Length: 204
Image 1 (spheres, rainbow, N blue to C red):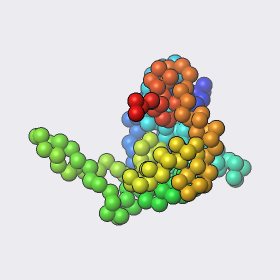
Image 2 (cartoon, helix red, strand yellow; image 1 turned 90 degrees about the vertical axis):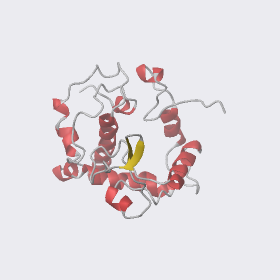
Image 3 (cartoon, rainbow, N blue to C red; image 1 turned 135 degrees about the horizontal axis):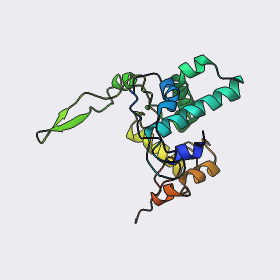
Image 4 (cartoon, rainbow, N blue to C red; image 1 turned 180 degrees about the vertical axis):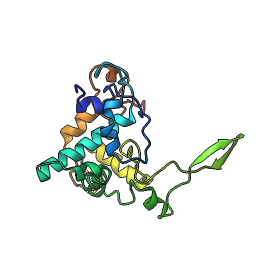
């Protein structure tokens, strides 16, 4: 009850990394099973990267958007969290930046012939392995985007230009970019972590 949005984003929520939830279950399962989770530490006291934290923060953004646009959250909204996140990500991030070859759908990515195959090392040799991507993936906000180098470059440029896309579109405020890139106080700062981002200085 005391976990904050900031703690979800700076990985000090105390929630475990994955919580042993099958990724092909509905995204609502992440919310429905929170009361079954044992936190690893009191919120705000320990840094622990958590896919569960990232995903919950994203789905809370979806619910906040629903509340702001419709006035109330229904069971249908909870049952369609993954679709809601897909739409919100496309509307707020992918389309404004011009990331037109990026998708959360493994099926769509496979259909483009652009998706590289997964590999694993077997007896010293790399062999093609079965993809772990599922549709839908309830942990999709924690690294489920399938993208291209060009699209990701657009994301990086937008970040470096304080929220302005390569085509000059304001995607996010400079204040939000700055807040995200600033070290979070407490245990997250010891890990050089901001809000869902490592904060490092390169020698060059």
